[in-house]
Length: 218
Image (cartoon, rainbow, N blue to C red; front, side, top):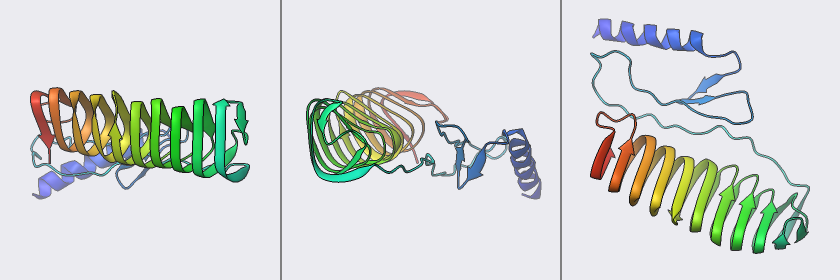
């Protein structure tokens, strides 16, 4: 046991030394100093340490604020919208073709809706819902994409979140790390705590990365 602990400590020290100076490791995720944060979830490098363990990963996103606040936004095609794209929306947004705002909280309806900050609420967009920051809620559309952390439900042809505690139902479901459930034709993630059901199921860091029909990691 002492030998195993010593090997794991040595591996941790070696990893910390190898990281760039701009990187920070905190609570299981790696946050880089650049504009596109990422995180790291790995298993023990010691082959003798075969026991499984859970590591929760989150993307370290930076909250931004809009130039103003509005309870309603109407967008034809950004920038043809009222009010302009740099506003926060707390209420209802209608996207006739494409609408964009800074932060969003509420009900989003239309063709394509995007929030460059966080996006929380119910999103019903025919083509795509895009959230550059974190998101919490329900997303329905052809494509649902969250660049940051997502918590909730995604239903569409293509669903993706970088990190999430979520349920995904679609033709393609993807994530870098997810805790929850994926159901579709193709389910792919780098790390997972949960269950996949589909034709192709991939958990890259699993002992068996690919399995048809069902794959899981707990």
